[in-house]
Image 1: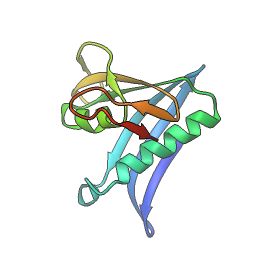
Image 2: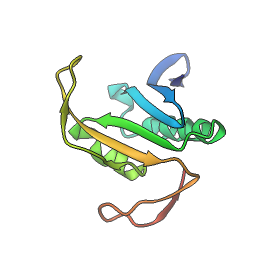
Image 3: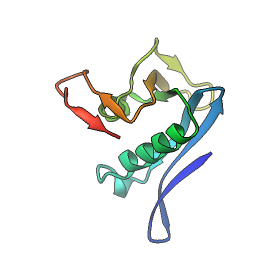
Image 4: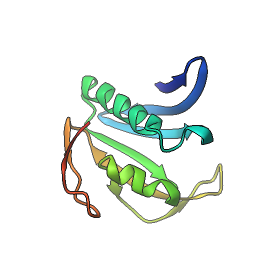
Amino acid sequence: MHFAGYDGDNLVAYCRLTVEGDIGKISRVFVAKNYLKQGFGKQLINNLIERCLELDIKKLELNSRESSLKFYERLGFYRSGELIVSQESMLTLIPMVREVSRYVVVEKGINTEKTMV
């Protein structure tokens, strides 16, 4: 499945979800440089999570760049393994996981509020 965010006719955010059983794997996450820190990525992932709830997906997995780690942690993801090197991009990535539920308690870092996603 593909998720996209637009500003008018311009594609500004994108990600892909593949499903294996009750596990969803997020990949190819992209937000255009001029649209970073404006909520497009958060909305994109939240829309994906809503779709996962409809499909009864129980868990989401992704590999994050170090620079995106805090973004995903704020959305309820947590580190789930050792660093890996992507064979495609040669980037060092951090495996992350998140249970799929309407409410997530974020306990990593200083944010401990209950967040509706």
